[in-house]
Amino acid sequence: MQYVLALDQGTTSSRAIVFDHAGQIQSVAQKEFRQIFPRPGWVEHDPDEIWSTQLGVAVEAVTQAGLTGRDIAAIGLANQRETTVVWDRRTGQPVYHAIVWQDRRTAGLCDELRAAGHEALFQRKTGLLLDAYLAGTKLRWILDNVPDARRRAEAGELAFGTIDSWLLWKLSDGALHVTDATNASRTLLFDIAQQAWDDELLACLRVPRAMLPEVRDSSTVYGHTTCLPGGRRIPVAGVAGDQHAALFGQACLRRGMVKNTYGTGCFMLMNTGDTPVPSHNRLLTTTAWRFAGRPSYALEGSIFIAGAVVQWLRDGLGILRSASEVESLAASVPDNGGVYLVPAFVGLGAPHWDPYARGAIHGITRGTTAGHLARAALESIAYQVSDLVSAMQADCGLALGELRVDGGATANDTLMQFQADLLGVPVLRPAVTETTALGAAYLAGLAVGYWGGLDEIAAQWQVERVFEPAMGRDRVAGLRGNWARAVERSRGWAEP
Image (cartoon, rainbow, N blue to C red; front, side, top):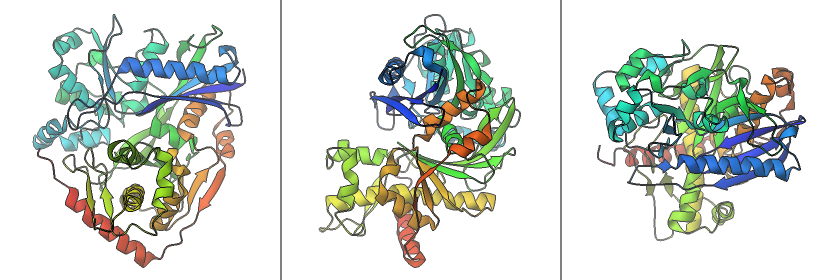
């Protein structure tokens, strides 16, 4: 058994990657699935479609590598976080679509809880701010709006989970209703210091405890599955939310190390060791991972729209035929021409946390071209990341020495260079940029002894390219000042 299979269930696609002992990719399979938008600000997925695509790519990746289940030592799972599923324990049927982390329908409920004075309680116990992004209010919406859901939940007939729980249920044919400590820490229901579901938080959100999954370590044998060809019972042995998995896959194993993932959204995490650091700059404190009952913690900044802004250029405006064209289009102009695009399509995340902000483009003139829009879209990603770095450094008092990056958009050299210029520190792109899947693989492999320990994992991390800052700081200050003006003018646009 020479390989580990990572399942990387993301916001727009399900992926599966086979890794060897050196952490190198042997095969990749990926399939997109439907994005469902019932109303403005609402985003849903079909849980059964998530399962079918994830199972399909798992089988495809293993087969593509010329393997069967007998060659897989363990399976690790990383998942889009906060996306909420409720299903019938007896039939396994979802009672409603999965409500996606991007969904804003519970912004009003968050306002009510804040007005009632509950935000300090949630922040103290969970490390989170009250925002529609998180799973707890999505679960409350399902209980309040799906006919008979609350009665059935209180009777113990319904199960709640984030996407990891849903997939573990399906992989085990209903034998497992579990989650890991990282995903639990994104629900508004979990005390991250006590590492337990909290009755006071459950009461605030009116969530029956009977719905909740068991919380386990991030690296442990959860159970077994026979979903792959060959019929072998394969251990599912590692689970983490995608951003926690990426932090682990980037070997950010020491306090102060930082990674940023450029995916549909952008997510920056700083390892803060065995102590949760409360944020005074509207970042989130979260469980980084948990081994043998002992948690490590991280500070996190969450950006809702990053790579998705390029998808919008392609699908919404039609100025790209494929997302890969954005770099050449952006490079067709020497600069942004004074154009700033604020991609607040579903509100703004950290450090603003404004669910009523909306997307805006500032500085358009008769001379503005598609190239300027493409450049402004790319630059918007880097500006948002720079805002997170400023907030994180203020919270921790630690100067950023380097930024390790991963995710699909890191293939864009123009974006990576602009990011280094804005931050004034080197941006390091690793040889293996699929660090979310790699982190899930590492967590699973450690649990079954496939890898010997953290030192072995840290030694495998390799840099592919370093982007050194080259822009003058006065120019950077001017650009960031204009960006801040653009953000301010996009805030509070939608009616509560």
